[in-house]
Amino acid sequence: MVERLLGELPSVCALGEVVHLWQRDIRDDERCGCGVRFSACPFWTSVGEHAFGGWEAVDVTRVLALRDAVERTRHIPRLAGAQLPAAHLADVREYANYYARVYAAAAQVSGAAVVVDSSKHSALAHCLRWADGIDLRVAHVVRDARGVAYSWTKTITRPETDGAAQMTRYSPGRSALLWNAHNAAFGLLGRRDVAVRRIRYEQLLADPRATLRELAAFVGVPIGAGDLDFLGAGYADLRAGHSAAGNPMRFTVGRLPLRRDDAWVKALPRTQRRLVGAVCAPMLRAYGYPLNPAAIPQEA
Ligand SMILES: [Zn+2]
Image (tube, rainbow, N blue to C red; front, side, top):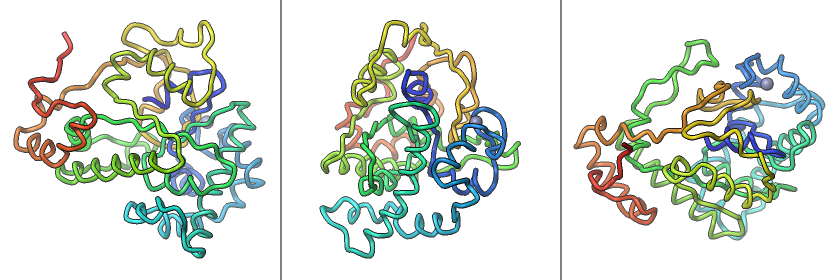
């Protein structure tokens, strides 16, 4: 959602979850956010030509092997170090530079000053720190761990596969551990030489205009009169984009309701709510979330 809103700003090009580009788009030819197959999308065709002389020149097997070798949550402590062992550094650089080439080409094709990759893997952000020529800024979007856990229990079909596949699901316990690990990883990135701005999902929905202004200032994009007119009271009017992969919301064109989803307060069973609350308590507190759901302000 944050990416879709950022993508409406002038001089910003939203790319979706580029981490999935290699398998789902180049190899499997899934659908772009604009609705057509990846291979038929003029934007991505042009990006592929600028970046690699055509997507067929990309050794997808090599990219995926590098990903398996370097982009792992368990490697984050090493990636977050001041230096990397030479052999590992070569692999991380090679992997990250595939992304750097995609970003540079997307900026060139779109004319945008800023491109957004909404890949949620914290290990990828740590890899990109070692890439050549990326001015990396990380928007770290946090949401109450119990809302995240509830959302991961739901069955959602991935529309780009025409109903053949569903989005990943996690148990609340697993989700709580992942929430801790990924948020800690982004916190660690901020303690290195990377610019990280933390925004809360709940803050975004309470005041989308203020949050977008804050993020635009963070990435150095000026906001002019009328640039936020796509935001109304409780909705955003979205144009079609070229998101490569990600949440099914990437296909939404037109009016997107901006409503805080607090269904978990009632729908996540109490034992699971308490489990997630206990496992995530230190960071929930650090981010300012009340541990008692009764203290969470409900919308009228
Ligand atoms: Zn497209």
